[in-house]
Image 1 (cartoon, one colour):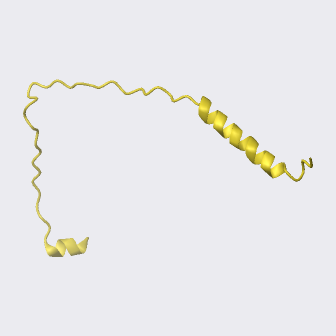
Image 2 (image 1 turned 90 degrees about the horizontal axis):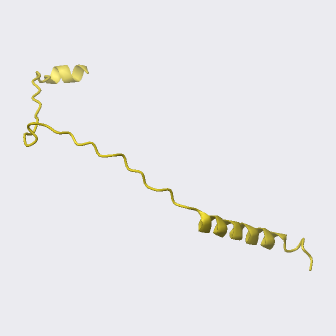
Length: 65
């Protein structure tokens, strides 16, 4: 058998075997979730709101930007 003629097929077969072996032996790392932090608040039921008061820009001021 002439190995030089079949070198491409041998190469592809070796790569396929190597890929299959690496996929079969690969292990999935364990999932490590960050510990949940529980923030205790005295008014846990109350929603905090922020009120922002600002002057609206006029059309001339908007155009200047």
